Length: 123
Image 1 (tube, one colour):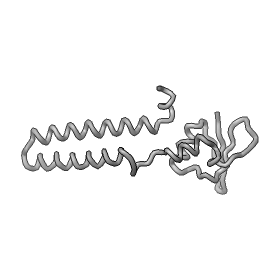
Image 2 (tube, helix red, strand yellow; image 1 turned 135 degrees about the horizontal axis):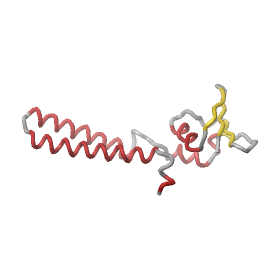
Image 3 (cartoon, rainbow, N blue to C red; image 1 turned 90 degrees about the horizontal axis):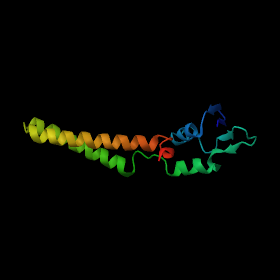
Image 4 (cartoon, one colour; image 1 turned 90 degrees about the vertical axis):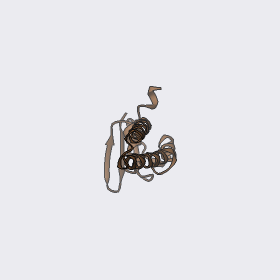
């Protein structure tokens, strides 16, 4: 189902609600923008659409929560690994490097799952 969004700068069309939601989470669609759902005649403010309002409230917050903490832990681990290489403790450096790489892969996969609007329906 298509959605049209208009504001003082113009109008844009989204091919699905997932695209609209992503634009909302990125701040491209403002709460005061008007939204028209395909097949409807009434324009609604974006912040009056419950699914969008909840998405904003529970949106992806890069600087809060576990992602930022795990990323800091990964940077610290990488720093330790580099120092171990510098000190010629190669075995410890390799072990720490692989642990950090695995941690960062896990964080990245989890972040992608949360951002993919179709992931929710695959459960």
